[in-house]
Image (cartoon, rainbow, N blue to C red):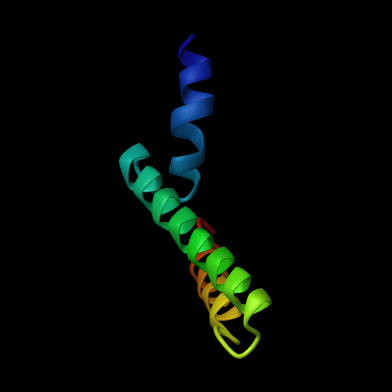
Length: 71
């Protein structure tokens, strides 16, 4: 049982030098940013003159924050 707990709740956060809580907060914020990017892309799909670079800017910022994390 403890191996399962370690595998699902501890191992990955430790691999990026975070506690479970820190990792949960990071993942929550990351998902909110993805929702914002998706909404901006939807707005842009309907009205091409709006949110022209918003989604790509959010995705680029997220990539920069996660690239090489834990290395």
